[in-house]
Length: 264
Image (cartoon, rainbow, N blue to C red; front, side, top):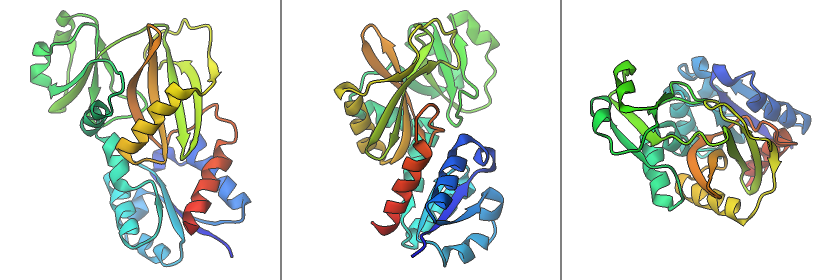
């Protein structure tokens, strides 16, 4: 019997490596895939589609997309991932608190108002992050307190983290349920001088990071951004449904998990 899959995808992600690769793989496996974006989520069109799907998967962070995803799950259709799990990383205030509960090493981080930045007890340089943002959007590095004068911030809250430029390479962990891949890639905000980039063997330390993050956030498709500092790993952020860049067969692995979820 043909598996019927509903994909909810914010338009800005629609033609990225994911979820387009996963959708192509699902169709190659014989699944029937219905695609809806946020413009269709604000109509009743998704309710008609819901009557003929076995599983739903979303790559989106917009409130309308997440609201529909929550309603789909409430109707009894299996989903990957839940709207609540995505919200735990979309809102970096929640992410920061949850990461603090995992016991994982990470740069000192705090949440404060933009007006209180001058009183933050962190060692410079610091990096200031918006509460809502991804793909390094809106990040600002401040080298010294005097740089606060050039900061213009519209949000009421900010995430502030000690900045460690290091070699300019991030260690990214990509997770598809129980599958883990590790890739060392140039940082989007630091000049990269690292000589060793590309795939990294997955060891027990990396598995422990994934296990703790998975337990805290409840995600199945996610990424963890890490930094190698003085011989140890520090966790920077968690991302929902990344592009899985440089991960072989990621599209097939994602599709296979979605199909298994349909019959779980």
